Length: 174
Image (cartoon, rainbow, N blue to C red; front, side, top):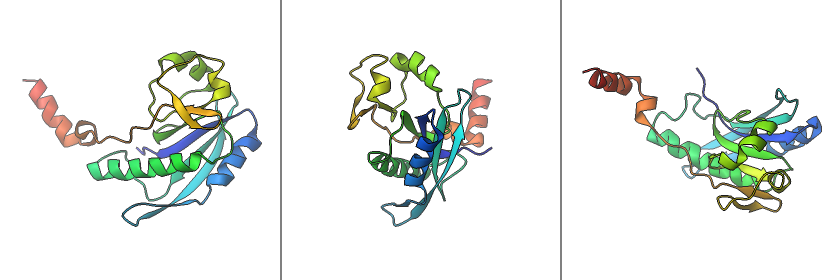
């Protein structure tokens, strides 16, 4: 099973807004501190509420999730670079970087859950924010946007290793 690391942005009800967002990110070359390069690929799709999304996924990135401390570091560095580009991107309603973040919430779900959402890295347009509530947990991201600061990706050995999970299960069954 593939676990996709990406930036996913919900761009609203107009397909052309998602396509502008996609054009901005398409083929951006991210250069990591170790010299490795990763080129961004994009795709645009519609959710069940008929709102348009853009997924930005860098190539040469693990599709099995965070399976080592090194992959957590690599994905965190790429996440930081994606957020850097997001500061200059065309408009969107909300966005998140991480593993399996496609359609992490529809627009209506987001509005219903916003007071209780705890997605580090969530960037939200003030126009959406103003219709919900105010919180001290969100900070300015760029003009017109707020965010809950990104905390990076985390390596969790018990999730990543079936061998360790088996050992833990053996211990728990005693």
